[in-house]
Every structure is written in C-alpha cells, then in structure tokens.
Image 1 (cartoon, helix red, strand yellow):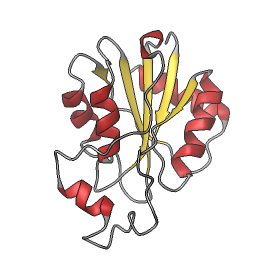
Image 2: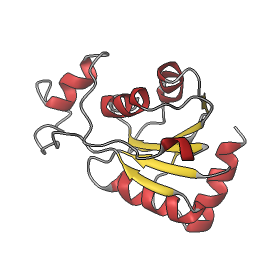
Image 3: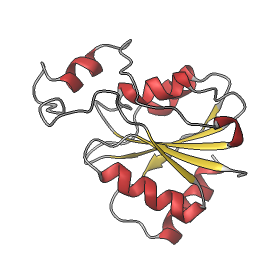
Length: 160
C-alpha cells in the first residue's frame, strides 16, 4: 500500500469516527476535509429543498470551498476518501477535495457511512474528477468495525 492518507468529510461525526479508526488500524495519516463555511443543522436539512446541502447537491457544478489542503499529498501512494452518502453520491465538498488535489498515479479508495444506501455512482464520479488516478470501488463502513475488521476491509478494498 505504501504511505496512506485517510481524508474525510463528516457532517455529524459518524464518518469522522470511522475515518479515525481506519487511519489508526492501517497506520495512515488523517486529514479532515473541512468546509470554509461550516454547515449548520439547518444547512444539513435534506428534507428542506432550500437548505444549503440540498441546493449544493442539486447543482452538479457546485464546489463548496474547503478550509485547508493536504500539506504534502505527494508523499502518499494511497488516499482513502471518506464521506456520508448524500443523494446516493459523495457530497459536493468531496468533489472540491478530489478536484483540488493532484491524485495522478495514486490509488483512491472511497468509503462511506450511510443509513440506507450504498456508494451509488460515487466511485465512477470520483474517477471522472481524477482521471489520472486509479479509483477503486471502495465500500461502506457502517457500525463500529474493530481495528482488525478495518484492516481486513482496507486490504480487500485495495485488491479491487
């Protein structure tokens, strides 16, 4: 696997917990994809078509600003990218991260937390955003997987 990074966006803390556990289990560095303008509870109300998250997800070209970038992305061979599933794909802020990074030649492994859906088109979308990277199919990491389960999942995910 070489040197690995676990980058994640978390709206409620669920993905943050899983990302930290995954990074610890596989000996990877951790990076939070933070919005330049934090999301409020009202922003995240997916049942409100006027909420910020609903407006962002309705606009395919939307790229919310992120607060910071990875200091030395060139040091990593593998980048695990974690997120909650929004509207059956990755949130637009994850698109901002993927497009703003030079992922050429890197292996990208998407993972998500979701209460009711899989990754949907996220891996395909991410491959389109980073065409010079190898984006694998990844998977869901729900519940509270143990360190051993996370390490085994990462090994399986990297095999494609």
